[in-house]
Each structure stands twice: as C-alpha cells, then as structure tokens.
Length: 88
View 1 (cartoon, rainbow, N blue to C red):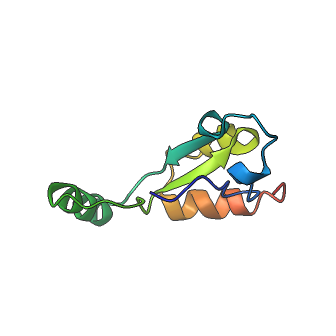
View 2 (view 1 turned 30 degrees about the vertical axis):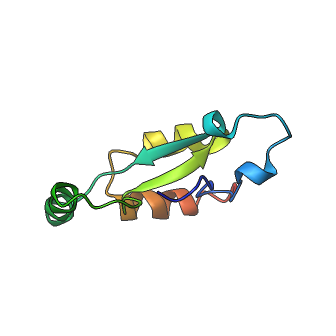
View 3 (view 1 turned 135 degrees about the horizontal axis):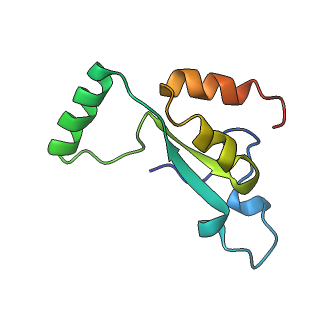
C-alpha cells in the first residue's frame, strides 16, 4: 500500500501541522473496475498479492467528499475528472 498522498493536491502527512493525526487526515477511496480488472484483482487476492490496488487513491479531507462522489465511476474516468478539477 502506498503511503497517503492526496491525488488532487499532493498533500502528504509531512505537510500536516505537528500533532495532527495523519491516519485520520486521509481517506483511501476505491473506484469501480471493469470486468477484466475485477477478475484480475480477485486472482491476485487469491494468490495473496500485497500492494496498492490500481483502483484506489488517497485523498485529503478537502478532497475526500469529491472523490467519494466519483467512486461509482471506473477508476480511470474518476481520476481524470478529479485531476481536471483545478483546485489542487
């Protein structure tokens, strides 16, 4: 799993004020997969694969709601829409 880094604005735990809990400052959002991607992910899960899922990204508190609103979209479409927001 990759460490937290907001996909939209690039905020990382190092950017937080001292004493802030970085674990609660970021949200991991999973987006939709297509049929082939889901089958591949299920196969990796069965094989015990460990790593960061291709359809998941970290978001800071300022961008988590927007990310969750796009969670029903395929991950490529969702990330393209979020990247084009212009508020990062």
